[in-house]
Amino acid sequence: GEDVEQSLFLSVREGDSSVINCTYTDSSSTYLYWYKQEPGAGLQLLTYIFSNMDMKQDQRLTVLLNKKDKHLSLRIADTQTGDSAIYFCAEKDGGATNKLIFGTGTLLAVQP
Amino acid sequence: NAGVTQTPKFQVLKTGQSMTLQCAQDMNHNSMYWYRQDPGMGLRLIYYSASEGTTDKGEVPNGYNVSRLNKREFSLRLESAAPSQTSVYFCASSEALAGVYNEQFFGPGTRLTVL
Image (cartoon, rainbow over all chains, first blue to last red; front, side):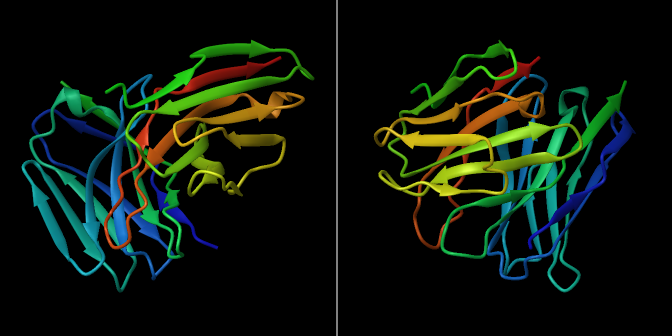
């Protein structure tokens, strides 16, 4: 079945770049997403990428998609303490529903 | 707009007790979802409702039931709570348009502890 994997933890210093990686298995996914969860809150969509794109940039965020290797990454430039959160990668179910398959989440800790 | 609201925010149950988690959305979305979040396991789909009047099992449906009461409301019921159901529960909703990314909007979560 579908599976989405992420490393559990990443620690960076304020001002550095952060790169959060994700691998997925469903090659028929049309959209891939990055969601952010701040402490004690629900998830919020950060960005998404359509499967026919290799890269998407949105201010400090860069998403890279390697369809051949089924690898997705999120780069956050100039990481700030406010970026400390859990980041979830998700793929849209390849079927007719709008179900999302979420990864385990990566806890990003930004050190001042 | 309030978005997606969930009640209660916190709940402690004893093993064997029952309860219903409530969820409502005011965005006129067709699809609604219930997830549970456990450490190191991400979000796992319990049940979903693609449209009013339909419900389907997700990845971890055992021990739960759902009701799509109307387009706005989607409730999750635990008939006989077990300690393994201690978790944070999130409700979400989305449009169901073909060919677009259909962002899921999440509620703030219900933190449930079963003793």
